[in-house]
Image (cartoon, rainbow, N blue to C red; front, top):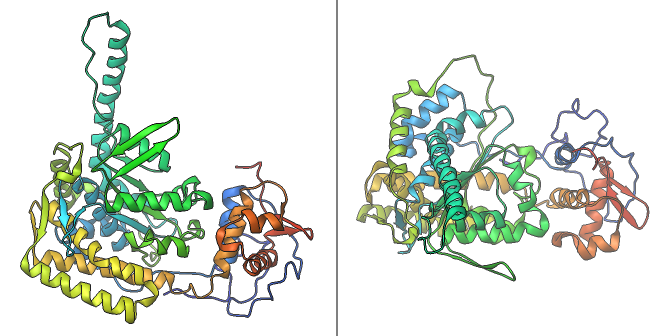
Length: 494
């Protein structure tokens, strides 16, 4: 559950000059600008300054206490159990990594018919929040090894083919037939994205791709998710999840029209690197976060030294073999025409009961604070079940697989409810939003420009002033009466 604590949620020894903050449950000072001055903090490079600001401003939050339903992974359950035990990572992280890794491959093999009767991609977006040192790479590397191995070999051949094409063009004589094109770029996964880069990747590359990052702060706190780009990025990713259709017209840049593309994602991130994106009501309201499966496992207990190699797990060897089987399938240029995995009669009945429960609880019951997530949970359950069925090599979802999909979707919903239950006090998130915006600007900014050009959530005077008060109380803002600037940041050090 999201917990409000008396201390500011960071190690005081790490930031010894940080001022003491009032307890989070105390009534904040009136929203009148700069009522009490605090000595500014010593300057840090931008990434460290943002991390310190998050630690000072945001209440400590954690995920749900419910254990991850490992058995609901069906054909992936034993591989997840072996990965969790061998690499000493949380079962939730092992499960999320495997499920997202299989979705990356399954989305280019089949689609699924949802309970509503629509044909949907087998694409999944996953977000896993874990502390530093809790094994993000240890979980991710074995899962994506077959994909990286294939991409390395296919990429090498592609580069050689492009070089041969350029050489053939240079030596071509009049009347010679044009040289053969090497085809689409074969790259399946990237660790970061911008919307423009993603559009180009799909325009030049294969139809099924993914964004997989163990340092997702580069994605969620980077250029794509800055305030001025956030809605555009989120809307494009929502459209890909829904329809797999890219349609862009740019003045001087031509037109990009691509049907049947697929994108899956797994973002692993530390809590301190989240910034304000998780509590952004706009992102939840437009359905961006409700499209993500969230896992937020408890911090790991102290580990013991235990040598382990994934090659020694029969279940992981079988997983790799099945991944290679999926990788060997030819990818179409348009995934909309792929075979459709259907729900059988019993699975339909189970999904219908799950849907009605989500409708009741999401609109009138205990899930009203996460209504957009509850209302999308049934499609998530169908997609998860479809991914598991595709990995097992079957084209029908039975009752047991439907139950697995519903259990994993429900676990994600529990985590979202726990993570977002503290949105009753949006002031800390607004203060962090303002600080991030100010950090992007070197020098003084007038209060008028904060209201005129700043983040939309802070253009109202009372919200702006409350955010400024919070920042100044934390030593994160300098104020001269009519202008403000971010405190504690050294823009010259990166």
